Length: 280
Image 1 (cartoon, rainbow, N blue to C red):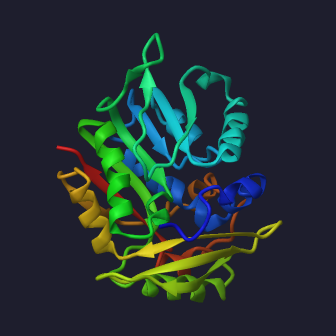
Image 2 (image 1 turned 120 degrees about the vertical axis):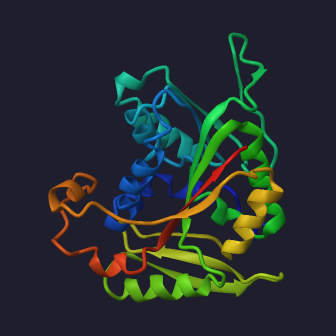
């Protein structure tokens, strides 16, 4: 059972883009671009936990033919819709729906709007979804939704906290980086019961205005077991995190140019990981 409201983002959805503008958050983009590149052209995409649409536009820019965006927060979706309206070249390629990705939901389409689209998506993408599962059963339900909507041979690509068997290792690294000025810290509120290490946490971002919210850090073994139990039985890979070496190229992904070497310490232990799982 979740320790916090699934609509915790409604109160600060307007401020959440300041989190997306942090350099270490922007560093996610080239990694996702590199990993989706072989599959995105003409792809039918389901984006889960779309938030304010920071990746929705990228996925369309990179070549997705269509995208259905799902989030539990109506306020987040309203922000995403407002953002996408600025890009007329993508008009008609996207639509949004409110749903809890930890419970069964159905995406519909077709001329009558009632035809199920289960098993029709080439790619399911999610940035910061699985870290809202407090335990293995909940994460397994998330993976069941993913597997149900993916077409055979499709892929799930997700951004999540740096994978560890004991997530406290990741938390300690994030907090050490906070002291170096990378923008956020993680407070452990309580350890979670179960066979594997897990923690209920509170994230605090030094943005203007400050942003705080709760989620969970679970072990990498929970993620792997949930993927299998949820129906994704194909290749599973934890991907390498890197950023463009050329300063000019790297700064294209930043809201404002960052000093040379700014990410060097962070790259020794990136605060996020990317998991790719195929559906057979």
